[in-house]
Length: 375
Image (cartoon, one colour):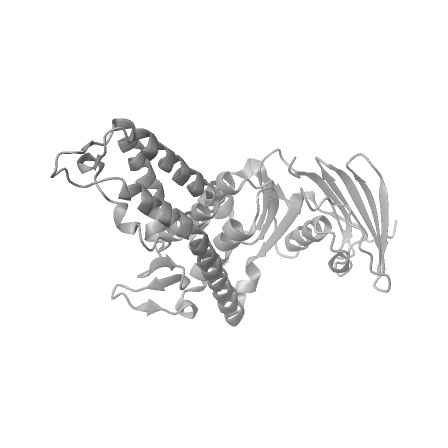
């Protein structure tokens, strides 16, 4: 069962802020509030807690932090540089004590079923850092595609073998039209393989993707042979569908944004890149800050967030046009259907990101209480 957060309690965040936050039942949640109310710090608390990163938790100024989830409850007490963790997860109690002098490896969350990723758009305020981030993402995609292409060589060969048993003419009169069932399956195969060809992953069979099945022939009594070959190909395709689906999702989302005077292309050699109306390459550093922001967020969501991951995004609206902001939740939902996130929590200032989804939002201004510790 994927982890979901139900409730968060924090005492003396920054030394004086108390929160008791009840999260709505939703796969998407929004934290909003004025500057200085701790939206970013709450995301960091959640992320470092779920990642069992005690060192980073100790860097945050708080007295206690309680995280209630569908897996159970964890409580963190901080006293100077000492962090005490009381875990009531998975129907058992555990206590972990961390100090900088005594670094412990005890984990309270099960890494097999619980993962968290924090996407921090603030990093894109630094141009050189943002250029470095998307350049690394480009190289990562190129490496993934090159690895995929090596594996897809088998698929490429199977398609060539299939079409070696199919003929484009019947000049000598010994062939017959493809059986309807085989013809329909080849049409389905061509549809599935088209993205492979568009991405440059098929070296030898890409020209067969657009062959018209109405003019294809085979030997009599070859239905079973063709059916067996098709079954083998469809099985091989199933091994690559997850990765190809992610690449096409990334391509679709970025293309839909209609970056000004820029066309996205994806190949194994470059990963992703952009060209202008003259088909001249556009260096990544010349993209706008908003374009870099969208690339960075979508890339991390699609390629780094595994199924069942808790996603935390800090201020995704940075540098984005209002129309782009209004579409973010919808776009995150599209990715969620593909990637099966456990939960997605967004911290934002923007009412345009929230759009009409106020029922899934928590306003820190309304929920905060001042606690100076003098009582």
